[in-house]
Image 1 (cartoon, rainbow, N blue to C red):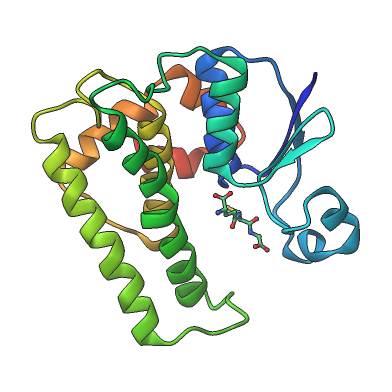
Image 2: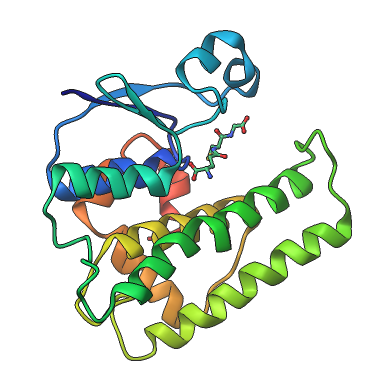
Length: 213
Ligand SMILES: N[C@@H](CCC(=O)N[C@@H](CS)C(=O)NCC(=O)O)C(=O)O
């Protein structure tokens, strides 16, 4: 089977790309420019009915949520140390942070970004923006506590949970200027320094990357 990833630089497809680069999985990359009108078009919705990036095909099978793509690739194309089995004592913590990256951080950041950039056609209220930022703040507080005594989220070391959260931290810094504590900044710096992450970000503007140097 051929894995084909529909990717736009800097978007959530980075998670899938970073993971596959870490694992050494071979995939076909179809890079599209960010184009909301095209994503909403019938043509693109034949590729991904959600009209979003990422979309990944394994042969005929479509998966279109970045965390689900990561779980799929690890299960189908592993085994990999990036995945944590259900028998591991850190399994619950792993799953929680794997999903926190999207549902506890990136999803809220996307709303706040739409709000501040004026690009949200639904024009969410100021109050909803504040609510979203509050949710992110809580997740960052939990992350801070987690990283106080660890280099990565889990005691066992770098895992897919770090890919999920690392992308979320980068996305939040770029889109909403989210500032981090020294502990979280140092963690993000460690993640950004990974060769696989650098390859996954090789197509984003250098000035964006220099924010994390
Ligand atoms: N929860 C989804 C979010 C996907 C998403 O919103 N992708 C953005 C790019 S980062 C997108 O395609 N936005 C275009 C649109 O919604 O029109 C995931 O994790 O894959």
